[in-house]
Image 1 (tube, rainbow, N blue to C red):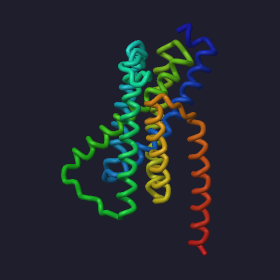
Image 2: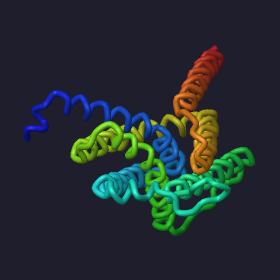
Image 3: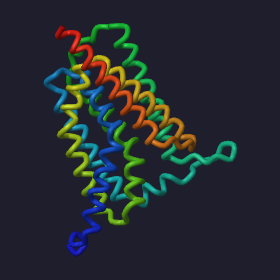
Image 4: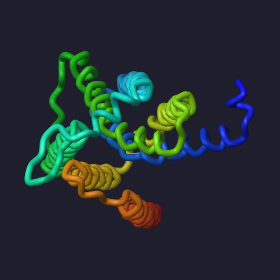
Length: 237
């Protein structure tokens, strides 16, 4: 209990929670794209189950910090470049995001009608599986960042749980907002392609500061917001 009487503890929790939310922006966008493919009555359930499982996975990874750090050690070397389990996961996750986003863009541009899936349960499982799988990939950066800020595992767990609960609360609103505007859907998919490419580069130890990517996304969102306002104005007149 003495730990929580220290003001630095609460500063660390707030800082870690903020970083977890910022690093989880790309995760929320992917969740929105995936959940919006489900029937309306299943979307909230898929998001909640997927993010709840993600909390358990992240807490498990934090409890196995020693294993996680060991996962960053090189497994093999190619042309004097070592590749770890983390590198392989980031590379494969990046390829998955590139393929998934490109497929979604093709689907929307070609105006192919959505196929009616009789087995809705399988569709739900598929969505949850994708949400959890991508969260594991995105978890590496957020958890390793948390490790660099504090040595107290309990503080990391508290920050992760708080940030994920906030994501569960706001994921539905973000999903509805993206679904409402088709141009925002395309922008979100373009952002996921950018993230996928960044993950592939990270797999080859080419670090791209996320600040650049977030600035580009923020600028694009501002431009799109202005476009939406202009279109509404023309519609009213």
